[in-house]
Amino acid sequence: MPLAVRMRPEKIDDIVGQDKLLGKGKILREFIQNDNIPSMILWGPPGIGKTSIANVIAKETKARFYSFSAVSNSIKDIKKLMEEIDEGLDLEKTIVFVDEFHRFNKSQQDAFLPYVEKGSIILIGATTENPSFEINNALLSRMRVFVLEALDAEDIYKLLSKAINSENGLENVSISDDSLHKIANVANGDARNALTTLELAYNYAKNIDGVTYISEEDINNCLSRKSLLYDKKGEEHYNIISALHKSMRNSDPDAAIYWLARMLEGGEEPLYIARRIIRFASEDIGLADINALKLANDAYSACHYIGMPECALALAEAVIYMSLAPKSNSVYVAYEKAKDDAIYTASLPVPMQIRNAPTKLMKDVGYGKGYIYAHDTEDKIALLECMPDNLRGTRYYFPGSQGYEQKLKERLDNINKWKKIHKNETK
Image 1 (cartoon, rainbow, N blue to C red):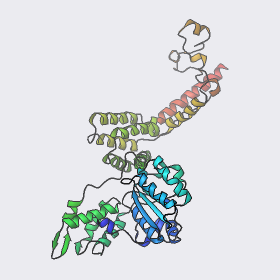
Image 2 (image 1 turned 30 degrees about the vertical axis):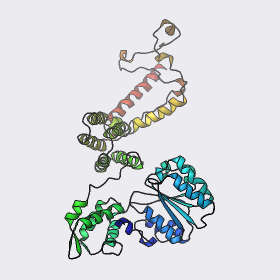
Image 3 (image 1 turned 180 degrees about the vertical axis):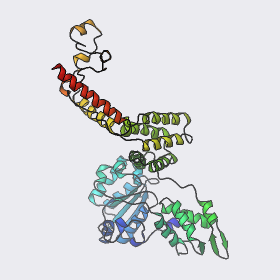
Image 4 (image 1 turned 90 degrees about the vertical axis):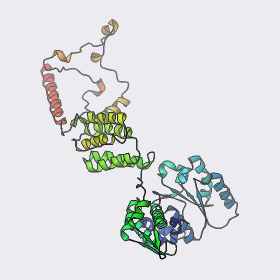
């Protein structure tokens, strides 16, 4: 068996990195020790021990354990087993474990529902995808969701150390702590990946007088480029674009450039990122810096014309600029307020004085009557009501005090003062 399989934990205390669930007095540990296991979803990134936890649960509770994979087993195979259990052919407590549970579509997941509801089986599903999006709601409401954390490098180092010169691991091995730490750091939180790398290096290394000496060069030869945790269609996609947006909003160019690199090196479509930067320029900078939207559009054009990897620097330039630009969400707030009014007051008519009158009939009934052409006035402003009657006096745009918007604030204040003075003069 592969080293990663041989090193699977046998007891709760052998499991590393999940102390929030399996530490002393924690909820999942209590369920196991009290032999009161609910049907559950184990949700977390690859290689953190979801299958191992399911195996430990079965051993600790002395339950009969059936393991399936949604990749290699059909729903018919599993359903047939569940029907046999339900008919009383198997009177023991039974755990049905399904790895990659999200691979079954929501209609297929319905097959589990009656057996979980009746308690015929304890269903444990493992998934790397957000259960809120991927698991049938009716089934999800009958199961506990346990969120597992990625292993840190120290957790993985401990696992690698256990695998050296152990009965189930690798025997007669010589390897430095630095090399083990290097494997742990490159594994990206994936214990299976780390143990597989160690085993490859072991098979690649020289054996001298019965001892296998694994050098740093052996490790380097077996290490592939560190895989990035990024799913262009899954939750990580939304998590990282959110991180990019909020880093720019918080004026943190270092964090922003990191999240940009995570997306691009993970294979994200650069035009998607460019569109989000354009949105950011309007939503979070707005008129505080009138160059932000221009630069965002330039970055989009660069992505369109030259693509990756050349356009990465254009996006990096835009991200850094957005991070350091003065911030204002006054345009966003103004539009959102106006949008609400537009939806709920869609039947309000346009005031007659600002309607066009392209025909004589329209002019005769009052279209355009009382309109004042602002350019014909001394101050280029007219006392002209442009709002529907029901919304007179409503304000949407309140300029911020950052950057260029300070000038716009002064301009708007002067306009409002002018209107107030001239209204008083006409009374």
